[in-house]
Image: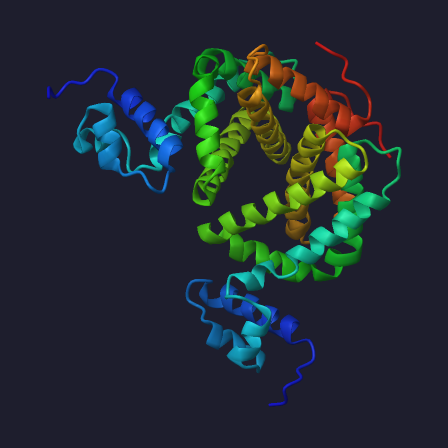
Length: 195
Length: 195
């Protein structure tokens, strides 16, 4: 086997997701993942600390992407909508082509308490990065935290709707914008103004 | 020592919080907690599964209280404000007299990752109970989840403000109402109508 493997991390992720879905996260070993991907365990550990981290690969890159987008969002948007705008961009540029992968990942995480806790920690870290990015736009820190934490709720909610939408008719970006309107409606009791 | 100990759970909680603050959660044993409270380990285990659960005693009762209040809230309120109304009631009837205890508890949890994860799970459980209570008021299930999860963010946010307010000038209920207005403002970009 040559030392250079094109898209090794992607192949390992795909193999891991298949195995977790087939036999459960708990019953899958790193050796089996590497074998399914046609790669070595050594290659696996070049990308991932353990089999759990396969499911959280890219969290850091997502945070960086969103923080950058928060800096680029239109100045007129209120704080929560700044993050929603960044999330909708991530929908279009990152997630839209990975719907099937995302759907499988959601099922694997839903089946395991340890993974759910890890997912909660991931979102807490992301919220903290986004709150900091809002601070840098001049939002008061406490308000930035409230907006960032609320945006995480919105994101999880929209993401789940998107992975469960088997028709595939609506994009994640559309569902995020809809969810912002829904949040406005449950908060104010008025229908959202629309966009 | 007599078998009947008045307010044994309260004395154990108080002793545990003191010890966690003095020497850290990790470095405190159940034997030490029982000794500080002037009670036996056996009494400790009558109330708490382990030293971690001392910090989460009453979570079930809080959920029950809030679910009942959600059922009693004015029919005219939008979904998120129904929960905020219930949370403000809990502020007045449960938390207001426990501010110092709550403040200590927050510091202990902030210093320990395992406790933070347990706290996240507690809030996830509470959100699910409240979403169900909104369903029973006729709110569409998906909307109920969005409102309940958002309300948890609001509650954590208000709770932290309240425990950090050393002047003690504002009640938790007031801070919760303020935070709803703030959420409205970051979502819509308009100042809240006021109440």
